[in-house]
Length: 337
Image (tube, rainbow, N blue to C red; front, side, top):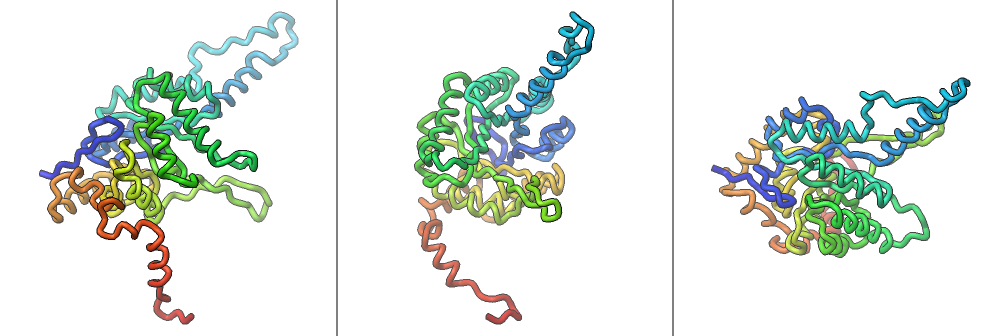
C-alpha cells in the first residue's frame, strides 16, 4: 500500500494535493466534491481588506450621510437586523466549511494596513481556520522604495501576526525578489511555518478599441510550474519550513516533479476550474500508480530526491541549464533558418 501522506504547516495530510484559493471554495457543494475527490486540505478564496473598506464606505453613505428632509428623522437610518457584511459572510462560510468538511481548512487573507492584517487574521483564527495563508500581493512601483524595504514590509506583516495569532502562517510569495533563498530564510527566522511559491500576478491588458486598461485573467499552464519547481529544488534542505508549489500544477507529471524537487504539497487551481473537482481523483490515482510502478513506498521517500542538494547534476538548476537550453534548440520540421 502506497503511503501518500505528507506534513504541511504542522498538519498531517492524507496526500499532497491541496486545492488552492479559488471560487471553488465559495460553495459548500463544490468544497464537498473536492474533499470527496481526495483533496487533503482546502485553501479558501481570499478575504480582501479593500472589499471590507469599500462596503463600510457605502454603508456610511447610505445610512448616515443622506438627507431625507424630515428634520430629526434624517439621522435615523438603522441597518437591517438580518444584514450580513462581506466580512461576516466570509467568517460564517469559514465556520460552515469547518463543520461540513473533515479536511483542514486554510484561510487566505489579503490585507492592506497593519491593523487590518492583525484584526482580520484574528477573526479568521476565531472562526476556526486551521492555518492562514498570507497573500500580500504587493507591487512595488515606487522609485524610492528599495528591495530591502519591500522585504521588510513582508517581515513586518508576518511578525505582527506571530504576536497575535496561534495558528500556523504560510507566506504566499511572488517570484520578483532579488534573492529568493535569502528572503526565504528571513521569513522562516521571523516565524513563517511555510512558503507558497509563487503567486501569479495577473497582468492588466490594453483595450485597443477603447484605449483603456482592462483586467485580464488567463488560467495557468503546466509550463508555469517549472520556475516554481526550480526554486523549490533550490530551497529544499536549506530552510526548515513547509514548501508548497502554487501555479502551473495541472496533472500528475506536474505533481511528481514538484514532489521530487522537494515540495510538501502542490496547490491546484486552474486545472480544477477547467475540469471540475473530479479531476483531482484522476491525478491522485495516477500518482499512486506511478509510485507503485517505480517502486516508491511513500511520498516521504520520493520528496526532494531530485532537489538541487540531491540531484546527480545540481548545476542543472542554476546557470549551466541556460547555456544547455540555448545550445540544444533546433528548428521544427519544415522551418529553415
